[in-house]
Image (cartoon, rainbow, N blue to C red; front, side, top):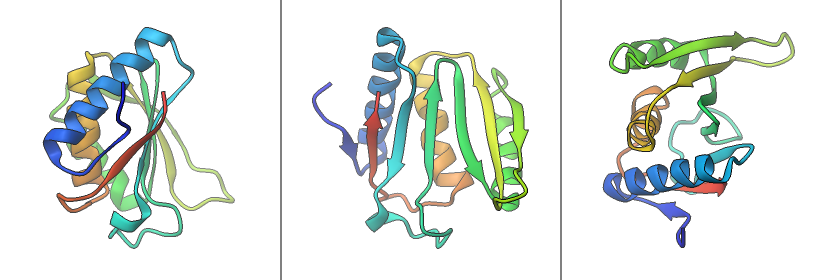
Length: 132
């Protein structure tokens, strides 16, 4: 892998698929995709949305509204399912762990749609793969 950011849907899909494949091939601890703070128009707080892949698990933080949108998105990905929801008292929102038993391209498509539909980012958002 030679690039670590992308700002169009086609570029992001390729980036996410390449990163997921590299993560799995290297048996890495975690792959992290962060949204560039300058392209985060969600007004969701100080930290832009992020999604991590750890083996076959996708990990993401969600507000209550985002969690409902995540559940709706999962209805289109039958091979993905929520395995764990954690809502610490000292934090707002929920940490969702989604099992993603699928290939890198399907994981990539889910990550893209999660950023666009769960977090409601615009189509020109820039994403960075910050860990593989």
